[in-house]
Image 1 (tube, rainbow, N blue to C red):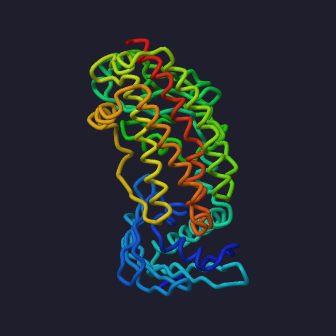
Image 2: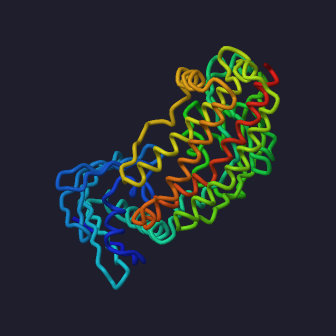
Image 3: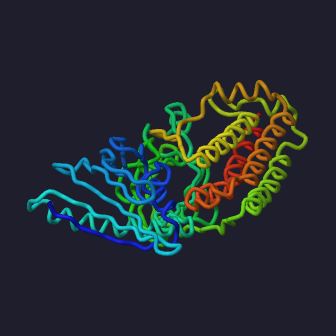
Length: 397
């Protein structure tokens, strides 16, 4: 067999480096887009990347915080190969050494060098995640500034859009690429950068894979029955300063929520409960329905934090949709403006309290902590994205 080797010094203890290779959530944060891992001999390891490249296998050797080996059999290789990772303490740092052994043969010579380059690139990201919490794949990924919505046959008919596959926009973010290119609410994007966009949201990031902020891409979309094509400049992604202190993060999350709830309550001033509960059409949300959706989002946020703290993150094949029965059930239990806004505020308050009480060992897991903190600090953008929808529902009512 032929073996290539890469090394990387990480400013983190061996336990943190070992965890990054043996925990499914940790693997997603620096290496792949989905992972499943059971770190014991013959325990499974499955790694998947957007674009449908994957590798499956099993652990062959495990030595806590010192060494692990696993079988690698990707969907494009004719045979499996073997990977061994060792973790050597050097003071407070860890030297990570990876050896990837491949079979002999002409095919594997080029493949081995490809592995070397990819592992070195990935280990550089590992350094960033363990030392700063920042996943370079996300930090360097461009933004388009959209609030994606679902796209159903009923919506296509209502909007007069002659296709059933695409990405419908709930709204765009002022000052960012999509808004600057002229895209607006209810536009349906069907092609980006020459690649088709379907109802599967994952087709969008796949279409701009490899692009960076400032790059131009061509966007094809429908506005009603009319098809348009525009050039959109991808926006650079702003990276917030996430404080690595639970109390400070809780405060940073809470402050924008206070302002957002105040703005949301103003929308409902002098509005009757009956008007707020009225749907513009049977398949469209009322103002109360939209708030119910915001409540569901905050509950999902709390579940997400819970999973990250435990280190056992649930995974799904999609983001899932909004179940009408769930929306109706929440409005049924909280049928007035004050009741439903109060429930939204209670869920936000509980999430903030959860963050304030995060255990120190979780705060020390910088990749998971930063990912959670970044997401929660942007939570109010979702509220503002639905405020216009609520205004439109009230106007229609």
